[in-house]
Length: 180
Image (tube, rainbow, N blue to C red):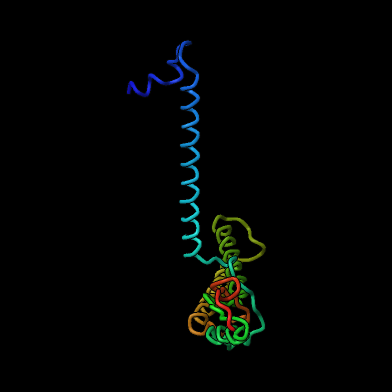
């Protein structure tokens, strides 16, 4: 402990040399620079490792459309490999198809609107000329349509395929090795 306190700037005497504090400051600055360089190098390695393990849609993703509704994911993958085979090998990482769910969203919005109306009726407020029986019938109809839509998607999702896909590639150019 005494070794740290004696050479500190607060214990300097007027007879002490000014050289010792300057050397200590220089050594501290050099030590800080080395530790910052090491930290940046270590941080860059971690960043590269994390980026390698995670592909985000922004990395190498294309939007393709006008596929027939009956097209499978395998057929789309083969199509892109066939189109690019003369130029380079293409490594497709992921294909995310788009589906028509506009009707489902409209049904959900209608359901929430009807639930709010039911809450107002229950609180004793008037709701645009509709009574509890009509509201219950409409809610039942909406719930039935939502259930039918969900069952159709569970058994036949291909019927909702919009003909559009997002295709994510392994590399920006499809592959790092070009064909010769």
